[in-house]
Image 1 (cartoon, rainbow, N blue to C red):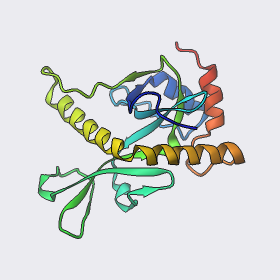
Image 2: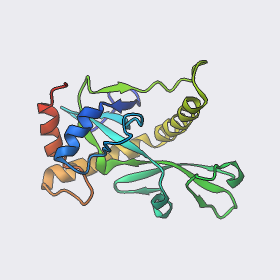
Image 3: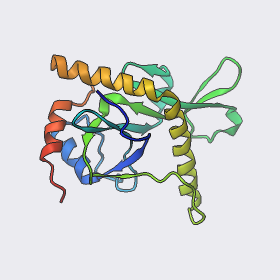
Image 4: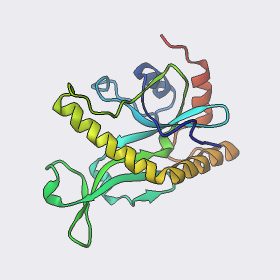
Length: 192
């Protein structure tokens, strides 16, 4: 049964660990080029004997057609005026003329086990010496964090249902990580 150990925490995951998992399960998010600079951001939760991370993925055009919530994912969004968005923003029109700006996606089917030493906690606080890009990224992460806090019980409930169903039936849903395999790999993994 998943729960929070302490409070909601965003983490960055060790890239070598992700590469190792991806080599055995192609559903694990990992790109060999340009990924060193892009953190693997996720929500840290705990199961009885394992820690898991639920990935938060950047918004993409395909997400426009998605519902706000589904059995295995959530859109993370803010309602705003279209004039306030950048030209690359992913959004949906609302009936009132405002737009739903899609910030990211919480992708439950891609969650994976993690252990101490393979991640670092993300510092969401703005610092005086942060560059403009870093400030903008922290602003985005703070919006995502605030959104996640509001729906945290639903995130954990859906994570439990997805995990329990796979573990009970042994069937791995389409585009879903193989939790049993990943737990075995996590247990065996030795940091280089």
